[in-house]
Length: 397
Ligand code: APR
Ligand code: PHB
Image: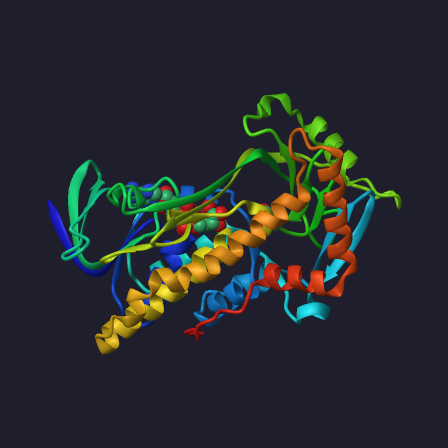
């Protein structure tokens, strides 16, 4: 059994784990990153792709933003579409900020390349199987090449996502779960066709929600609302394009060209928060602690926001032996987590058709969309949430 010792044991090489390892490295704080999948798997896993201004600033400020700046698509606004008419929310004009469309797996690739670039390993195909004694002398036990290994560390960062081992390691009763399940899901596609719009289009339609997004000037990313247990076999390509065209149609004759679909998948919709996010020397970050429905494009950005809070706390601890910020980890993260949960729930409620919706609810959807797109105050509120609320603590970048 090979034993390792480090300052921070990080479980998971998703955006949370990799961003944390990187920011800590820049502050001279050592870490070991365990990832149960292969490098290729985490670098090709299709996930979302909208970065808040604050996330872009952290990635660029920490030296992993070169490709992001070159290949990321900066958007100054977004369109809300309903009743066959589009309404643009102008982020620049309303809040002086923008978003960047840059796929999550590209962020993951950049962070992995950076870490391997400064010669610090990431243990891929290393599955953490147990964590222990995280109140005093934290230990992580993991399996690699069918060998058992152990890491002794000062702190454990549970960045192992929703299905990881860290949150379930917290004894029953110590964790409170706050959640909302939605009676629908998203059928998402990637297609080799230039995006039919240079900005994202969120559409409310009586047949259900749809979203036009993109990955590059050649690759479109589109989603449509479906039932939670949708059988993707029942969605041949031409049916998907036809449904997207129906939902996104406008009076001006919006044209949605189709193209070869090279990826198809169903994304479940849930809102989930586990509290607290700290148990002694164990910290839960990102999807390990909270899940947002993708309508508000907050998942990855919230993971990076948690990383920012923990990094500041660990810097304070290792530089000044001051545990104050670390002890406020949950409180500092949850302020932003719940605001993003509210925004994501609100966007989801406003833009999706709920089963058995009566005419009253249908008209409330319309009134909400009409208000948001005709009131400067309401569209400013949407804009400031969408581009990313300001961080309420001074950052490292
Ligand atoms: N041992 C090692 N690695 C593990 C283990 C384990 N026991 N369990 C899970 N992992 C790894 C997963 O394989 C995954 O690569 O932890 C990583 C968790 O990464 P994410 O699920 O991407 O979670 P996070 O880093 O918090 O990023 C949140 O990801 O899912 C999107 O929309 C979400 O954008 C959000 C972002
Ligand atoms: C995406 O590009 O995948 C995307 C964009 C916006 C969302 C969700 C997903 O709200």
